[in-house]
Length: 432
Image (cartoon, rainbow, N blue to C red; front, side, top):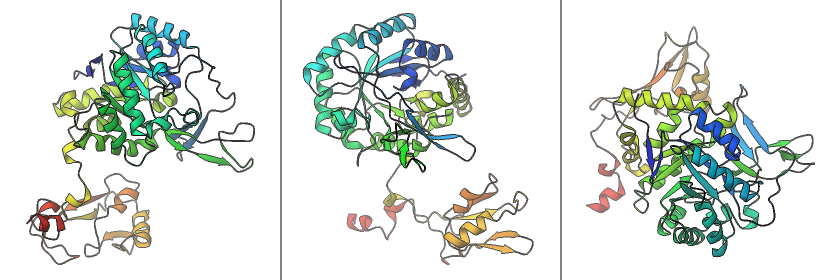
């Protein structure tokens, strides 16, 4: 099988699959089970400074969004950082790292924006032998109300300041975890880079309320009749995470900054997509909480087989898709496709017809015998029919070759490489 060994900012692990900082990495017992299952690394659940103890709720901590088959699509949590004593966590981390020297062990940290607080905790962290630190600038609930978490991550100046402190008082690799609860994720990434961060990780959870109890009239999870916003994660956030990872990977200001991809990784394909968009490794939480630690074994075998089939290495995959991520204005407007229906595969459900007739371009005709046929002169190639069809590959998009007449416009398909060279592009005209 392909070599999956990973070297992320000098932190080595047998594969690029790490557990994210979360309940699954809260203590020694869990982390040992994770390593035994095959995880390449873990980010230990966020530690805080010594002081008043962190107190979590004693009622439900999670809200959930289910699919029709009860599959977990999204998970919301209102849990705070670790509520276990700092010295206990540090002792366990030291022992685990000693017993598993080949696995990555990074410690997530969240302390007040005070230089002495960071200086103090970093000295204790270095003594554990951990491989690095991850600065939690992303948590959107509980701790943010105390001036930490996403309250820091939404202010680039704070990110840069704290990152400088960490690099000043520690020799360990520093990963800055970014919040998605911001307009432009590139700005905090740039701040982390200016502060000397070795890498960024993203996304942290999205501020959310997943549901409302319509008997209690309170958000879920409900604690004694009240609910609060929490952090949303799981498969549902993957598209948001992929976009943010890609934005950092392709931005001139942050290009080359190592990225640890987080957000809805459930299968090896999810991981491969993050890697192709520039992530050097991936972190997982919801999938482990849903299916258990052994889910990583499918990820390892699947990614290895994929790399073998493609005859590429792990490093070849990292960033492979970044050059193909562009802005809308550079898309080729002369690339033309039309939907086509495989009548042998069609089950005559009519979903494509209903969707197109009611909400799109009336480009599918229903003929006698419930035979559905695409009207090329009306089809704009939106591919909504492909997306709603319950039979995979029953409806596909056929590319019109150069020179063929588009029945909708009456024009021949032209040979413009992309929108940059299109005569209707105002930027192209300005360049002339």
